[in-house]
Length: 211
Image (cartoon, rainbow, N blue to C red; front, side, top):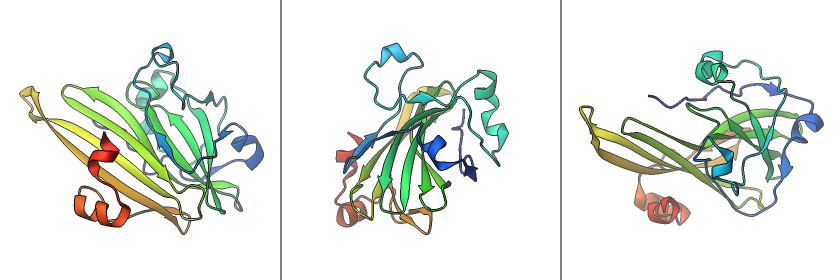
């Protein structure tokens, strides 16, 4: 079963800034590790820090509703987690959203403080598994107290070597690095699985960010 993608999921979210942002509690730290909730039952993870508050009404526009075919049928919800300063011009809004089985996906909305709207989005956490496939995504947000924050999206993707034998799997670890430029999350195209580049450019090794 494929991952529910969200390249255009939150395009053109326009809300009055005070009512919308007020749903998100403030979190001020220089670095944050964002990771997904691993269970559909909240009582299984009582200390999970990104549960958030249910958004009773959000005026999403230009959303491909087909992306929510399964979540809508299962009456899944959106949860406002935290707002995080991302330099002087932007605020990051952590939104927990429906995924394949429950609300295990996390998106970071890039809120422009002057325009008072979300101008971009980035998936920063996810977990699901099915028939030998396993997706685990978590993200490090670094240098948040500076004017050039960095976001390292760590992906662990496991797939069966052979569709007829799901017990034998192969796992790929990758780290995709983003900065903010021109109201967008800008991907460093050289990041991913190039271990030497990640070490030299960002002082990052796959081992110390993937665990």
